[in-house]
Length: 528
Image 1 (cartoon, rainbow, N blue to C red):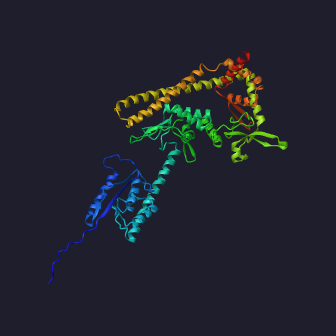
Image 2: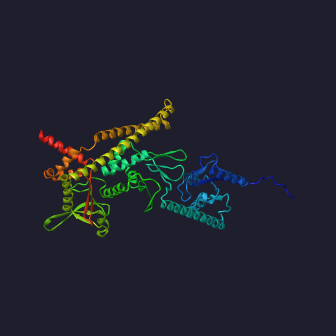
Image 3: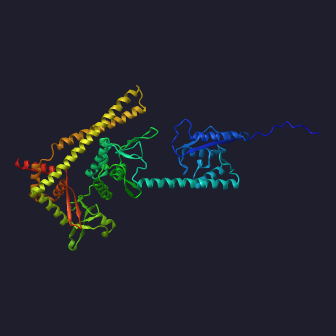
């Protein structure tokens, strides 16, 4: 006789499932229903279809929006692995295999971690079981194709960027100070106010001949790097300059109307802000300062042209050095840095005796003082440079006035948004930042106005001509250290062309005027 059993079937064990979602870009994540939501909905639906097996979806969300699948540096994935190691998860569900990883090596490591903690892995759109050898084979084949697809996309992207750059087009990246992005296409448009500032920064570097003093001056003026707004409405940039960001600006060929791709330089579609000659001068000075850190190196042996002499064919600085002759006598000469670095065959000028080149420069200055026509030419050039400096200051003044007006208007708008006792809001933070910028701009405005007053009506032709005429007799009375100072005051640079046997001297814009004032001051002192 059979008896009817009243025992109930054994309860199904609960399988705790976590849904992992990933999207490579941030595009569209601000929408109410985005790709991450669609992936999670598909995962939850799959888990619901396995409810009879005891599957249940954990409420914790593991979403990585804007992260590549080529590596494991993703915050949600790290939280997922931490929960796996803590024993909180029994099964991981993804929409597709490549959502978890596109790297075969990384995926193998993840599967090893899952196996170690007895965690199953399921792809909603690709049916396989990681518990069998055939399932692992299918999984690895799928992942190999995912990695192959990622590498093909990367190669296509690199090729597209290379082709774009070679045609001189802007291919994206962080916006540059001095330029705005054209809303109608991927082009750079000159921002006139910022362009004035870029030229001023370059001029400051040529004046101070070092990154640190320029960074300090920019900080004193309150000047910051490019500020822009992302498509999502977030503000970026606007940070104070550092040595790194200043060096990046000074070495960017985009400011000369060109584009760089790896080691190649190509003509660009955008307009230049800095002329090529000035940019080359900056590069030569940066290369020279790379050896000295921009510090003023002690001029032990009174080299008159230290820091002034350049090799015209190479465009490199020529540095003073010496060798010992028999009897302990020193032989001084200037050598091209190109020849020193890459061998003597790389430079047509190579070197020049110090005494010979210094004598030629001094003779040229003396001839200027003795020839009325040369005096007129030099003074005309000095006057042109002074006028150019006046125009630069006037443009900077207009730029500062525009910025101050814009910031004042923004301050008035923000003040209306601040509530009593509200000290931590974004409006208060922005107000403090604007106040700091306004203070720096007003300080710089005072400096600009002061320099404009100093330049006054321009070069006093009579006094300047008299100063050049008196150069020769005064020169002989100066000590060696004073002679070096006078040359540095008077001359901006000397270009030496060895094969042609020629030199070209560039006088400082205000050097002749300063020399005239010093001589006039000395004359007054003598008469007193």
